[in-house]
Structures are given as C-alpha cells and as structure tokens.
Image 1 (cartoon, rainbow, N blue to C red):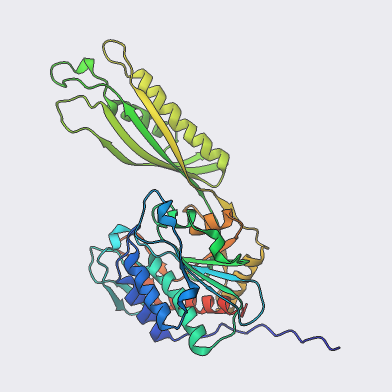
Image 2 (image 1 turned 90 degrees about the vertical axis):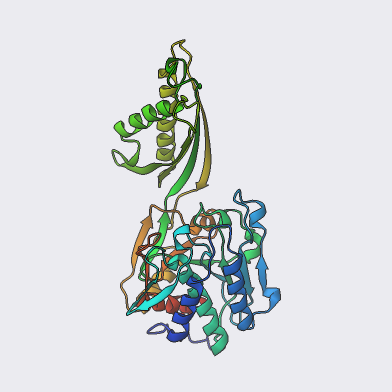
Length: 403
C-alpha cells in the first residue's frame, strides 16, 4: 500500500478581501463597548455571524458576568465549529471591550492609517482590530468554502479591567483546543509568548478625626500616614520600576480616595495599587514592602495621646505570569505563519496582562499576535492598515491549518 504524499507547505499566506476587511474594522471600531458594557458590540458580532450563515446552535454565550466582580451586561461569546478536515482543534480569540477614552470613536482613514476623527477620543483598535481579524478569517472560510480543522472562535469581555472575562470563562465550552492564538495590540510580525503576573492591592488607612483648626493634635491623619508610607516606598525603590539586583518588577499607586472637608483631620483613606513581575517570588517581596511601609507609617504617626491608626490590607490576584517554550507547537506554528507573510518573526514577552495568561493557566498554551494597533489607550491611537490586513491573512492561514 502506497503512503500518502505529504502536502507541501504553502509558499505564502492566503489573501483576503482587503476592502471588506477594512470596511469591517471601521464599522466595529465605531460601536461602543466599554468593559462590562459590551452588549452592543457583541450584538454587532452576532449579526455578522448570522450573515455568514453560522448556525445559532454553534454560538454560545457563557455566564462569566455572574462570577465577575464587575458584573456586566453580557458574557464571553464562543463559536464552536466542527472541522471539514482532520486535525487538532484550533482557537482564535480577541477581546470585545475598549477603554473609556475610546467612547465615541469615529474612525476615519488617512492613507495607510485609520485614526479617530475626534482628537479627544481614542480609536478602539485595541481590540476591535482583533475582533475584525477573527470575523474576516471566518468570512473568508465561509465565502470560499475553505477546508479547516475543528475551530473555536472566542470574543471575551472585560479584558481591559484585569482579564475578568477570561478569568471567569466556562473553559469546558471551548472544545479542548490544542493550538490557541490571541489577537491584541502591536505589529503583525511579533509573537508574544510570555506575560507578567499582576496583583491588585487594596489598602485602607483608619485614623482618627478631629477639628483641624482647634485640635489637630488629637487627630490621626490618614492622608499623613499614606504620605509617609509612599515616601518610604519611593525612597526604597519599591514604587515605579522596581529593580533589585537581577530581579525586576513594577508597582503603581493608581487610586486614592479620602476626605470631604479641609477643616477635618482626615480619618480614613482608601488606596488601590498594583504590583507586577514575571517572577512570583519577587511580586511577593514588593507586596511585603508595601505592607511594611504602611504598617510602619501607621505606628509612627500617633496623636497627642499616643494613639495610632491602623491598616487594613487585602490582595487580589489578577493573573499569573507565563512563558511558553520556544519549541512549543503553538509557538512554532505562529512563527511559521509570520514567516509566510514575508516578515521576520520576533518573539517577545510583555509587562502587561493578556487573556492568554488565563488560557495558558488553564492548560491551553496561547500565543498572542498583533494586527497593527499603535499607541493604544491614548487619543493618538491608530490602526496601521497593511499590518491589520497581514494579521487577517495570518489568522486565515492558522484557521485553515495552512501552517
């Protein structure tokens, strides 16, 4: 019996309908959908799926909002399709939500870029470009009746607020994919194979109120305690970029809420901070430095009667770090797709969190690819159209097992 001849790998990536792909991403970026308020953009995606003839039975919405602390008006959207050829199931993913600065986006094309017409708003290419990459790949498969292995498409919610959608995803609904690819910000020739871990700190300082004019010495200023603690952290190199020998991480105090009158010694203060590092042990050391600084400050700042305030300290593990091996099948497949696009692939790790953090933690190693988003989370955000179209071609190749 003769053995089957192996099919030669393609010399280049398949093409896509460029005009349709650009039109689609412009439409998607104009649809509102802040974190926890993604129903409108999910409805737009559902309408596109329906127009492509995707059966309702293949479309699933999970119950992530019931578990997410943010709540939310819709869950993660999942489309699960049987294969027309044999092969391991492949997953393609891109998050639905945008950051608040993108509310009211009016995309307009300027040469090779799409930008926001309103200079006061962001564009929303993060991550509507990724959303559109998935829809374009699916549209090409349906339009051209392209053979493909079993496929799972996922549009998660609440990525921009700590990866909450994927954190609380019903992973059993994914169909046990073996090769997973996520589209988010950046150029299309970069494969992100690792990301940092992050922890959110909530610190409450409880002091003592008194009249700030008549008897300030009887009070314990929660703001004073915070000021001393923060100064200690900055002086010790524990705030901002944290470098201790060969170990690196970051920390940031992002939210402080306190006081409602200038003539009252502020009795309470609530503070939120975050700590990041690729090394779990070093994250714990940075967190310990925060706790020590605030507890020390609380003990040091006493009132005239020798009474001290107190600290309430709590942690929320946002996501764990990961680093995929260079020889992992999903990494090699992603790099081959980039090579076929005519680019020299680059591997990187990021100091930001990705939906890939949680997929990888649940046993689904995931490579994140870019599709032309630039200057994300700012009013200068733009989408580089050639990179976006290249991302669409890469996604189509991965979805059809051309690589």
